[in-house]
Length: 380
Image (cartoon, rainbow, N blue to C red; front, side, top):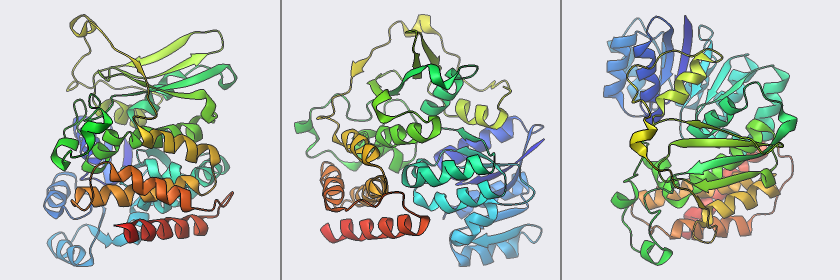
């Protein structure tokens, strides 16, 4: 029995992680979890799984639930996230929260020796050097949950890092993959949230439409697998059947395939190095699929991907600026304050304004993150 702490239990990845725990109740136990403001779903999860510790966003919700469930310990806020992450009765931390709020809990859990199943891109994007150094120092495995990084991780099993020629991340293209830039001028939030392949949360779906999601994944892959940016490519693949590939020096390419279902990489992270059946998953039938399509990425069309390569290669605090500006801009778009293409404009202005600080400490990263958000808000 593996015991799990889950950050972001009511988000898209969190809900699918719950599905895995529910399907394999003899293998996994949900010991602790965090939620934001979805208290109604939190109640249902508490009744079903009887966790020992639950963290919520607001102190008022904490007091309310504490009165309802006297046998469960409740906490709240950012400190609550850390309490869940380092909970002594859990073996694995699944970090499925959105945004840079996931950084502190991850670092604390690494120091406690927890196995980390990471779905929080921003943790590695903003402070990859700190996270990787801490994981190596504490001999803690970082198991990728994103379908692309899980695919690469699986393709590298039994292989030597020195033989890697390049990593090839595949991209669906998002909601507007068949539109020209001119056709993006007046797209709506509802249109942007209509992803053709994957069921994801609002922020990630917008990031997929701008291709920032793939840009963040490029930076994440750099840290997870120690591969330079020059050897990380992105390929447009509309079917989302091949989740990513690794090319080796001898010209061999190993790919991981499957139907678009986030539960597969989530479960692999939880069971690694073993596998369990996933009876509720749809099986891939290539005979029915018939054809797979691929295109080179157009960095002029998808400017956010270009920004990510640029920020990643410069390094230092530049990826922190990239992520913070994007989070602020996407939030503004979802609230109807800016148009879709203005997301790119705000990110570009933040990147151009920033003076890079090399090898930043956690305190510097947090300050740059705060300053970048304030700068973007000043432009709205």
